[in-house]
Image 1 (tube, helix red, strand yellow):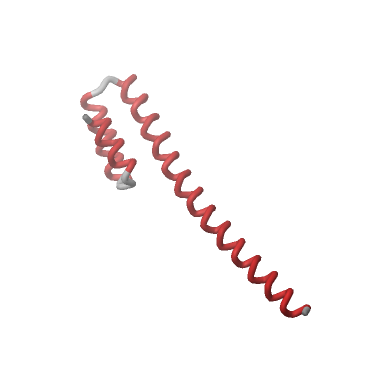
Image 2: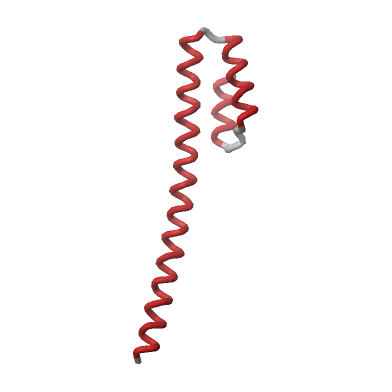
Length: 82
């Protein structure tokens, strides 16, 4: 159940440091140390993946904007030369 809650908040990007601390606390209470470290590693990997997706999304938007600017500059250059 706790793992499901963690996945839900990661997927919808509602995780903040306070929530993370609550999850760690709950895991420490209900799970043995070995499982705790495994779940925390999974949590961190999922969080990194969601951040990577955001970076990729921003990167693709910036690349599109760069292409648009390059096209406009080419058109201006051609217009000024002719």
